[in-house]
Length: 229
Length: 209
Image (tube, rainbow over the protein chains, first blue to last red):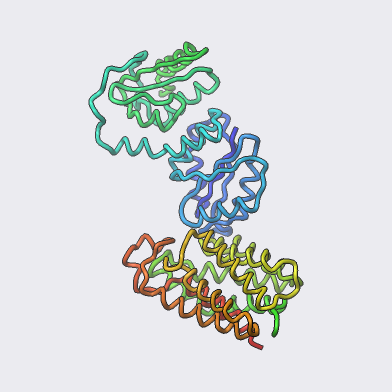
């Protein structure tokens, strides 16, 4: 599993952003280290602490660093000059909160550094879609059709459950709606960008050795209403 | 003083800390006009911590001394000035090497390395309304006078830094928090340039005797 470092000017902000993200992965959360504040309640960032945090979570699969603004980026860049953790360390341009949620979920789902990095970069897509205009008229779609019967549809938590359910299944899974092109079933931000709500249909295609298992896993989640009471 | 010694370097940092303390409210006022109003407090805390560290455990070699200053600033300043001034002193330390003193030519090379480190760290250029607008002219003035004695070179660099600081007033910020203000950042001296002018004035004072 990749390691994650959160760099923020504010320790409470980093802690709260992480808590929000960890709600998505109650079991098996990825290793996350915080480098936030300049000590003693002072707002700011500390490159030495960032370097320490990178070392704390470094493993074979690499480390992705998420930052808030300004000196957080500079301190993270400087930290890379202080440490040699023996694995790749990458700084993510993603917005902190959206990016952290995407990275925590994808990392818990076994994402590689490349995949987590990509997920984080795409982290604004869901919000952009939510705020943007409706897309072009839908073309005919293919896939197995399921109707979302749970109250909130495919919002963040259910989408996270889909990503996790597909974690160990060897199949390429694409999920779309009547209004939206299919997205990678392992992409939290992609799934959220579908904007599929209560009563909407989703269309699932799967290929690969475990394609049937993948579809079954999604069917089960939907039938269970994603565990919503 | 023909060369900068470890004692001279420690005096430089000590005088810098005193100057930042004395100008603390002024630096914060400048920063409240175009930034997040923390430059005075951040710099005062950081430079004082660096000066205290040198006083408690005085290094005998310039690289150890400036490395201690740089690392202390990185860990205690908090804002962007931490990694920026931290980089300045760490690059200066590397360029000077494990020596007990540096003649003006060696110091000029070290200051140039520090300047280039700051530019790379901040991805900024002269004219962006940053500390580079004071540091660039200061280093150039020092280089130009490096053939003369240390005190003369340092005095020239302090004057150039002050002029560079003043010249930031009409500029529109293109880096840092002030750049969020766009045209409204014009009409204010850049706080980073102001603290950099204090840095070079402190050097000139420390080597004047």
